[in-house]
Length: 70
Image 1: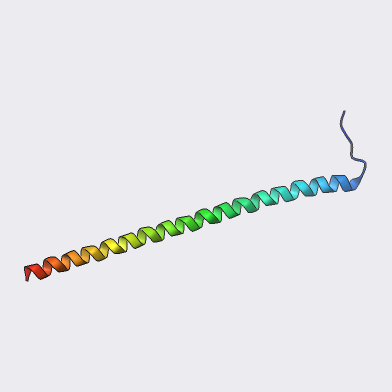
Image 2: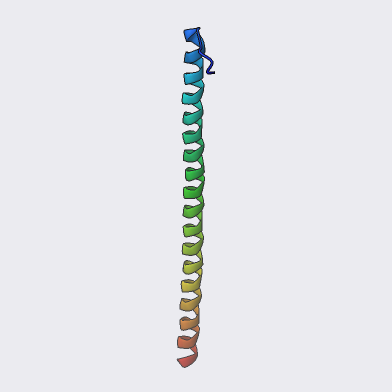
């Protein structure tokens, strides 16, 4: 019916294999999470840069209007 491992080393290696495969899954998940975090920071920086450029353009437009009104 069921195979019984007579050698304790076989049970140990099977347990270690499962253990390390679980650890590898966690490591992969952590790496994916870090990549997502880096992408989120880059996206935030891009948005901030775009906002800064828009603000600079708005200031330039206000300065041009002000100069024209003088």
